[in-house]
Image (cartoon, rainbow, N blue to C red; front, side, top):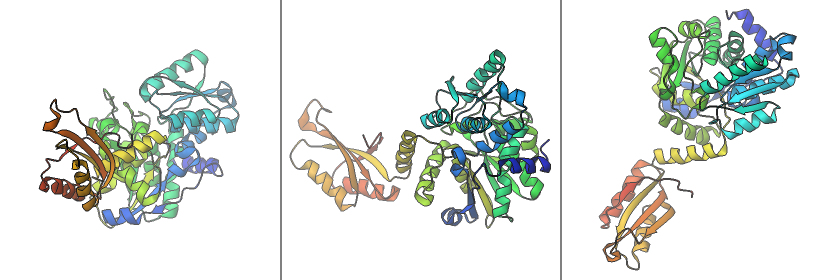
Length: 406
């Protein structure tokens, strides 16, 4: 069981090891949702994610014999860094099996902490199977990423800090992958304040916990597909599942497209880098059916490689109509390109890239294609630019933007 005494023990072990990530009030999200929104920035935690809590506490409970065998785990990245960090402090070796799709920053950070990294499979479940084989072959001690009550207890210490900063919290939003974080936070939150509402948030493409709750037992999805790699789990933990059933009031599901918008919001409004799994609670804010409540959103991590960051920025701008591309057929004669540029300038658009294709037609006299990628202020501004082009006699049509920085 996870008891109040267990959580107190975990908090004592973690004191002086983890960062105390104070809640950050969000004026922007509060105004947008009608609630008083506070962010729990575990992206600023040691190793860049909450996972250090569970990994460190779990390793502290091992016997000397268990540690002497060496540690092994499977992880999409954040738990890997937590185990590597805690193993180094405990003076024991650690082997981490990570999916081949793991962002490079998480792989390199794990190696930098002294762990041996093995890349295997495309999903967490593939990596977990490999880790299990290493336990059998080499006698290593397995540190579960989520399906373990000690691990979940360590993660749950987040709730202590939420209540310390915001005693009258009404709603806690927490990401769900395998269920360790949500089980720990929800269980301690209910022990501290039974009337608090705890909502789990999953991506629609990997909603294994929601499917399990609806079925009444743990189920395995045939596949998972989401940009939130940290919660891309086919099968949630059976040991933590009863705690989710008892203490999580509901589970919301979020489309990946909403995570892209949430990433842009966090960068522009709070100057924070939050990874996709940690953005689930931010995206869920607009789905709450309450007003005037004190809401705490757990930002579970911030470990992202720069290529992913660039891609999310690009897609976020496209989603909001702040970058778009239109195609227009022009007569192949001097001055036409300048005329199009003049129309865009008068409408206060900012051209990023021009592509002039003279070979779209066999007969160049019948027209050439011009593709214009530009910055706008949003969808209404985009519409006004396209309308101005049409009023000038051009059949301007929006097309896919692609990589507008290339």
